[in-house]
View 1 (cartoon, each protein chain N blue to C red):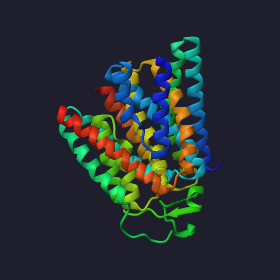
View 2: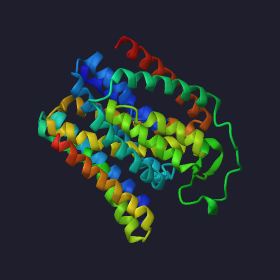
View 3: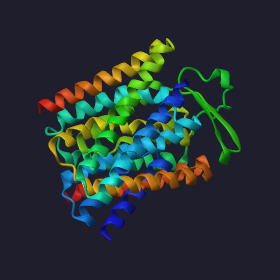
Length: 85
Length: 272
């Protein structure tokens, strides 16, 4: 599948799933649904980095594949540093 | 009433994100503190989540249309994320007033440059087979058809992206405000493509910080949900608005934004 299609579907899916969970949480008063929606929302951009990394690795665009994996590595390093503080 | 207000604040952030490519946290966070009595740390956390919502919602549409340049965005993200990590490590060692003053001065310069527009080399648009690794092409009805561009001066863009990332790590704001003008003025990227690429990128930077707030339990669920739902409505509206605007109008709107921000930041630096 075209990388553009993969990314736009992933972003749209993440946003709508998060919005659905949050709306359900607001209406029903179940706070944990909102928390789950937030987790989905925050997880979507890193997933997008992974999706592009996979897509460019499969199409053998090494330059951009390595850029994507570097961004992911930096994100993980940031989480590790943040968790330590 | 309060619920409606929160959703409207979110809608404003989503609208700005869709048209100008910024997260809107720079307006949303103070609004949450001043008008809704949300404590600062919780407002910043909600602001970050709103930035992610804007980025994903606007990004999906712009990736579809080819306006958001994913390759360029990913390359610049290396600098942004590295800068953000460095910035958050230095956060307690730098005087925020000095930073905000500097922020204001740079924004004033950006305003002047943006209002005038890119002065140098107005080359004819490249053929689509000659866009290079980082160029792009997309349909823009307001420009009367297909728009194509080559990316120039990558090191400058990387430098500004790194600085923008550091600033967002230091102050929690300012990811898009410098990247969009730099891409347009120095690198030959059309205003709409610069905005779309920036809004595509900011979700990743914000996600890096948002995780830390999520872990510390400083995210208020109800206001966040209301703001996020507002963001989605605002960004859908913003996409319609952006499609009707000419590139020059986006540039002038952006200059108005940086002028307001420069004034706001100057006041903050002087008030302390």
